[in-house]
Each structure stands twice: as C-alpha cells, then as structure tokens.
Image 1 (cartoon, helix red, strand yellow):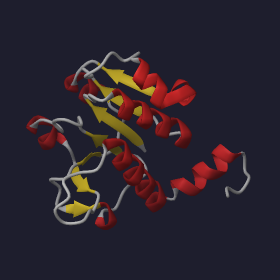
Image 2 (image 1 turned 90 degrees about the vertical axis):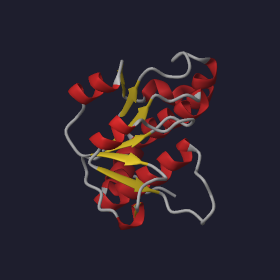
Image 3 (image 1 turned 45 degrees about the horizontal axis):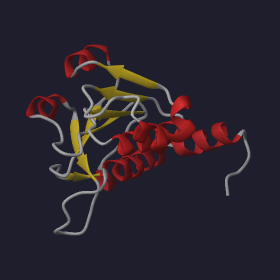
Image 4 (image 1 turned 180 degrees about the vertical axis):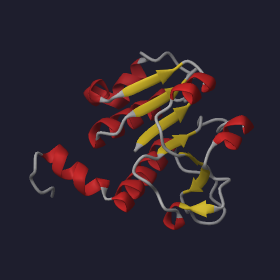
Amino acid sequence: MRLALYQPDIPQNAGTIMRLAACFGIPLDVVEPCGFIFSDTKLRRAGMDYAERAVIDRHSSWEVFQASRAPGRLLLMTTKAAVSIADFEFQPDDILMLGAESSGVPEVVHQAVDARVRVPMRQGMRSLNVAVCAGIVLWEAMRQTGQQTERQTELSGGDDLD
C-alpha cells in the first residue's frame, strides 16, 4: 500500500499526509511540481518531526512517476467516482492517489488510473479536506486488506493499542 499526492498545493495538508504516512508506515509518492517550496515552514509544522520518519519518493513530473512507480493498481480518490470506498475491493499493493486541492488531477491522470473511488458523503457536500480523505481511504484500504492489524502490531512493538 502506498499514498501518492499529485501536485499538492497546500503545504499544511501535505505535511499532515506525510505525518499520516509516517505513523502508519506507508510510503508516500509526491508528484511535483508542488504549489509550495518543499521545505516550507507550514509543511514542517503540519508534519512535525514525523515527516522526517516518512518514506517519501519525490517525482519531478507525472511522466517520471509513471515510469518509476511501484507495482500495483493506481487508484484515484475523486468526488467524480461512481464507486464508494465501502463497495470497492482494495488490494495490498494499491497506490492511493489524491489530487491537488485546488484542481484535482488532469484528464491524462484520470485516463491512466486503474480505478476511481470516492468517500461517501451527504448529498450536496462538495468535498472533504484532502488530508482527511487520505486518512479515511488509507484506513479502509488497510482494514480490508488486513494491514491495519499487522501495522498496529509492528508499530506498537507487539503491544495492544488502546
């Protein structure tokens, strides 16, 4: 399982997702360019010292990411998807991609993904914060594939979590 950010443009959200990746031991791909300087103070503040412990692969472009990405299905989290995460079968090697907060992803990315899925929300609501979405989708994908139990044990040193 991996998370991927396509050209993130809000450093606080990217930092929060870095922290999420570090805490769950999930690698993170960042497809650049970003809408901020990668060493931005807001990025560091949101990621705190956790970001230093995240495994982050930066890719200079969509093409570079595609040429070098890890094996597995590429899944796009989008409000335009017909399939809810509750009705989707995740696999352990899925790459969960989230688009830029301001513009999502371009059509070329939509055409390249293996599936598009969405977080169910009340009718009339436009979207969730991208970091909140990342947490919800990652947990559901890990739950379905049994990885949350493995990660909890691995990350807690074998102790039960409260």
